[in-house]
Image (cartoon, rainbow, N blue to C red; front, top):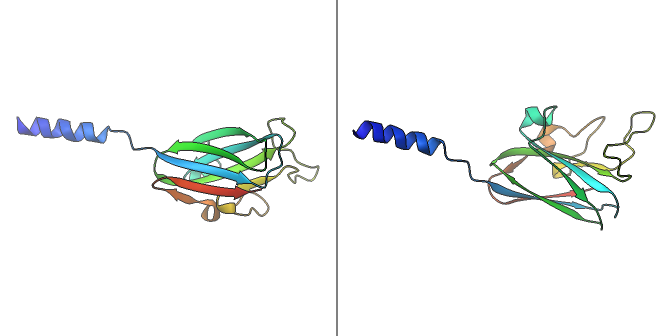
Length: 134
């Protein structure tokens, strides 16, 4: 009788959801128009070409904008761009260079493409804040 109860207790404990943590992202030095398109990636593989775990559009009315995510603990990266003209996509010039501001977590800098994972990655293991400047 003891063994089935122990097994049931262990299985129910394994099924408990992971506690959510709060990730607050504040964008600074933004132009007071349009919207910031934010994509949150969990892990290197999704950051390098997978689907974001969360995505938000944040309306910009001043020089700062904030978005909050509830996420599982783990390692994350953020890619964002400021959609100044409100067309819902990042615009490029004829040479393929972005014409709208973009940014990455940790204020990592992209060179000839998005910032690399080691530069943009950050851990969430409790309430976490990312301040990102455009």
